[in-house]
Length: 632
Image (cartoon, rainbow, N blue to C red; front, side, top):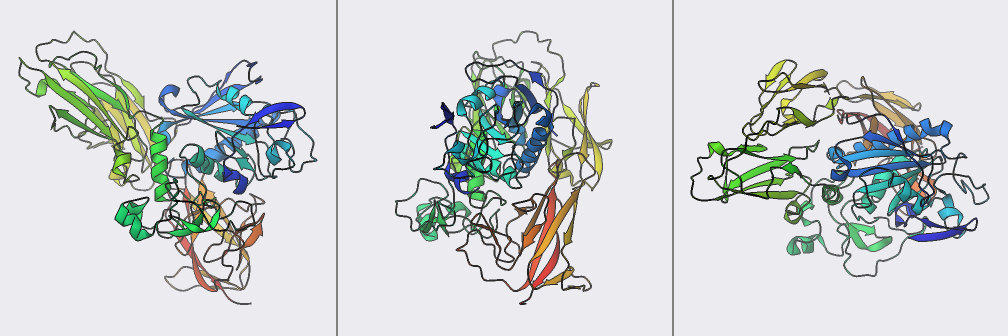
């Protein structure tokens, strides 16, 4: 913790990761008012469940709170929360593991609007709930964009969320400000209303949850970081090794070498990182840990999958294991249900695999067990996600869990009157995407295996083996809206979802070109001899925010946010890029992040692609146009 003295009061502030010193449907409604807490000096707060996927003590809990929002401005806080979450759900692995995460908003009305020292040190102090402030809490030796929070009050506010603790939650404090700023560490902070602020949140969670390090090649903005002088970094995504050494030693990201990076380019060895310009290398040319707007690359994504999964247990419940079981009953496990893919369940009897097709329940009566001896039964639950290649990660408790029972056929099972019913399921209150896994869990009568049958638009869907999950990707749904039903066989109990299989659309608007070239069967081409702007406008036939993305010449997909200084302004492309606060934005062709990157204009023709990610997780088909930059 860092503490600063301001207005005569000693206040704990968030531990600061270098991240923001430098760089910067599952929805439920309703709120419950809570009382004050003297220890944390938080009063008049309300806890609002934004996304509930399960009990708080069995989920990773994201707790967002606002500061400097008056009671009349709480609708603005709610809009900022929605924008930050929409961005988070568009980024892997949060998109695939959204179902592991509960989201809570702690609404804290402040007496005054805004936060301290915004934007300058001589700006007035505000009377706010969490005492957030720029300049490191109004410290003249700090920097403007360092946005801190009173850590004691932030923790007290988060403690108002039942079932959460420092072990199973991440705090994100949003300031009512349009000034760029944030901080990372134990508590992440971001300005709520800045064009780039929603991109800070996943970056900071990368630090605090995944222990990822910054890939910047500078410490102070505008000043190259110099040469790295240390030994082999402990950071999983920095190294001194060559690609051949990584392969020979099977070290660092050797399993991903040569693959197209999720954040653009190829996974390899790119110089710069850990605040040094030379002498240390990272996996990708750019990723979200280097440049806000890009994705986590595969190396970082694997780390984040493990980090998120380590906050939960893949096995949510199971047949009790304390005593031996009779052979006249069923045995079951309830698992988590990632949105991005089904978990695998393997059953073994005395070490021999059983043919169950990944079912969550096995009926011991079908196994022909002999009396006079006992058997060892196990169920191993594994996440087979392609996001993970390291067998050590795959085999860790985060991605693999095993439950064991002793079966004694001489024992009998008491009568069980458990009624057949649905228990947990994918929320039915919002459309699900065409690439989602939808689930429906049931109760577990001791002598019955309730079968779940699925139908789409009134037609039965084959789903052998694990009938609790249905992977909609396997159905190759036609664009449009569909009706999905899950029913417990032999009963009238059913669940219904709307499936959104139509991605949001997006259109572009460019500033006037020198000329427009149209050729049959080719994308339209626009010719410029200097800077030009591009505005992307998304539309969807369903509720929920849509994230637009673009990329140039096949580079990484980059989130469209308007312009760094104005979210309502179009994105500006220019031959050498535009320097804003010692970072560079919008260079056409090969991107440029800092002033010392190559500024040589890339004259010639470039391909600009654009697409959307909607609230249901549908990723739109990429469309494109051409831009030719000619010398003036």
